[in-house]
View 1: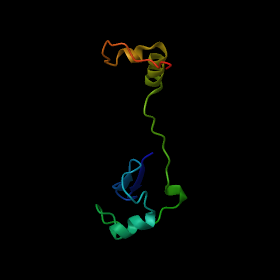
View 2 (view 1 turned 45 degrees about the vertical axis):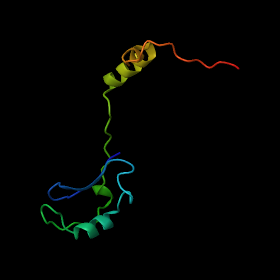
View 3 (view 1 turned 90 degrees about the horizontal axis):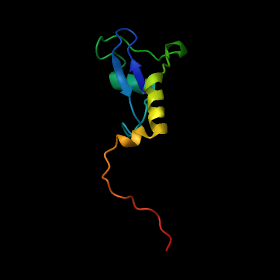
View 4 (view 1 turned 180 degrees about the horizontal axis):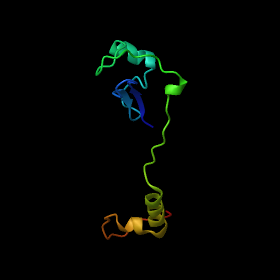
Length: 98
């Protein structure tokens, strides 16, 4: 899930957390963002404030549409997914008892 700190005045993305391991410190608090930026937006120089509960928005971002997801599931179920992988025409080694 992407976490963004955005200026309320101009919409500038001040800081964005995209993935785990992005940096050593993790997701900063709003207070830490204000310390780093000096309490003002880097773009419009509007004064930043600590967000209240109404300022926080949670929006789902689906990776696939339903039809794409269903197509992937159907391909996996019918074996068509494996046919698209380029494997050499060799016999696979199987486990053998000694």
